Length: 258
Ligand code: ARG
Image (cartoon, rainbow, N blue to C red; front, side, top):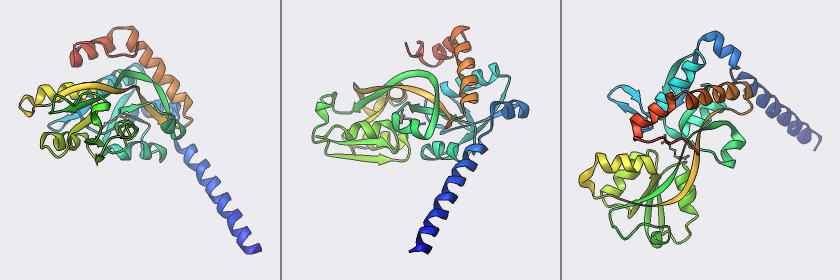
């Protein structure tokens, strides 16, 4: 008994220490400034927000992050990883920031610190059958979504859905719709618009919003100094016209949260 409780206690101490060490490792804004570059992770498979044009990482969020970093007088070192690795790696202090269209949710906010949002959007329903447009139309249907996203979470709330099929990449969730393996796909409204234009022969039609969300970057939980500087830089590009120009270039409209 004694030995067991001693073991339990030392295990608790070890876990607490690990927690401290993990927190202490996130680079502070001063350390990042001294280094001259910020390490930002994204996915690179979510056009037009973050994606590859050949070998070059590009997209609206890539340009917004570059502009934010430039305001902070920092260069960016980009990392591209699978979506599910992004927030996990942030918690392990493998990069300073993540920008990959994450919706601000309570659940995620327990694990990371969100900055101010850089755009507002939401999940829409896309189908080839024009009769599938609303949440009610998803009754008895098979729906595809990307794993670990707010799309998955929100489709699950539609209790009448027959089955939710998860894919590690959103592009595979789309492919499942195009090849007729699912009845509907739920993704970001701007991703959907982009896909409809890029695949005119696929017969995809965009229905209603299933939910709306505010999209933000994330830094390590409690890295308030970095979050404050990012927010200041974001406010500056929102005010000086550079955000508006980037948004106009990618969407022909300003997609900031209003
Ligand atoms: N907005 C959704 C979410 O918060 C999807 C984000 C997907 N991002 C990506 N890079 N694939 O979960």
